Image (cartoon, rainbow, N blue to C red; front, top):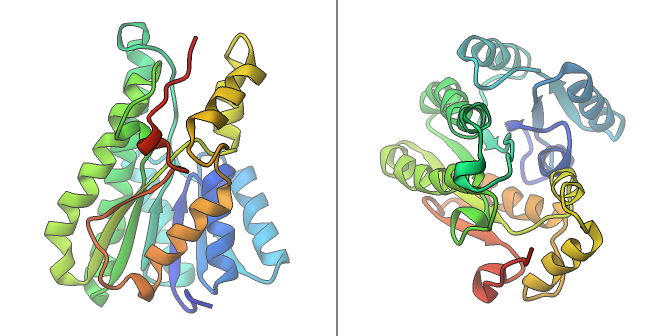
Amino acid sequence: MRLADKVALVTGASRGIGRGIAERFAAEGARVGILDLDAEPCQAVADAIMAAGGTALAVAADISDPAQVETAIGKLRDEFGTVIVLVNNAAIMPTGTLHETGIEDFERCLAVNLRGTYLVCRAVIPGMLSVGKGSIIHIASVTGMVGLPGLAAYSMTKGGLITLARSMSTDYAGRGIRTNSVSPGTIDSPMLHEFLAQQSEPEAFRAQYDAMHAVGRVGRIDEVANVCLFLASDEASFVTGANYTVDGGYSVKGDQPQD
């Protein structure tokens, strides 16, 4: 119960990595806000957590909209209290090289992955400052460190989150708020499945992704959740401004998928 009595908010928590983190936090005693775009899948995750004996609240919102963010955070605060742990996981992943990425896709990627992170942080930080403690975790990506072909906009935003965590640490560490980023490699998640479905030979492409990681496979959602749990807990009390690569050695091996 490493997060007992803590209020946590996980964005993009209706599926994949975000859901895995939310469920792990709840299992460790946190009261968890499940934030995502659509209310129905948010409620489904909250219901599953409560059925397992945890505490959760669905707070649907488009995180690129300031008014919706404020409403969602206010609802969570009224129900559970001040958010002490924030995981910025919500993201979209348009594919294509830079010149192939349409303006609408590019701007939506910025709006969710960066603007959304800014808006959610802006909404919860005053509460953290009022109690003198907090842990903020940005879910970045190995693509923000070494890049992958066909993911220009996504990679740019994920690199921005790594830098943002470092910058926020200089602003808030002395006031009790730790900020770190986690950069997963390829994770067996709905986002990966959707990306593979766009390829001409999905099974062969998946095999390439397995081989790119030094451990010989893509990662599991729980392997990312484990690191986030550590960073959210008091065990990481001297950790801020760090970027944790949870990539099975991809950033060391450095292979690239072939077309």
